[in-house]
Image 1 (cartoon, one colour):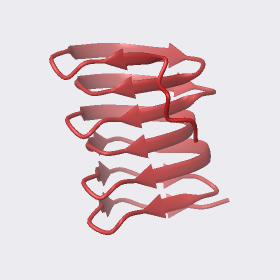
Image 2: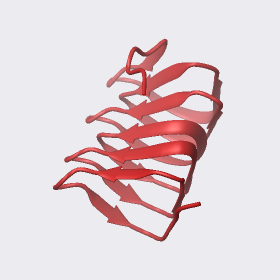
Image 3: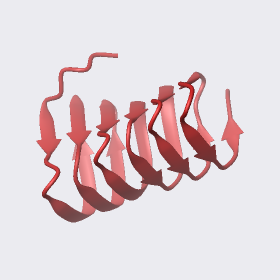
Length: 106
């Protein structure tokens, strides 16, 4: 996954609503709502996200509450906290990551 982000929501931002983007997007702040994209999402280590998400690839470093559909891959980094159901063909989980939900891999 290309980790060069095109857009960033900073740590000091609190945002509600719907996010649509095309390439790579990094979320470091607080967000509640929906995220949909054909691109890649990075949830930074300071992020607190409550959202239903549909993207191509997602990397979770922070906290995420919501259901996730990823077309290619979900990565849960060592400090990730994911509470929700996920669907993806490929799941990578680092030691220390927390996941509470169901997983469908197809």
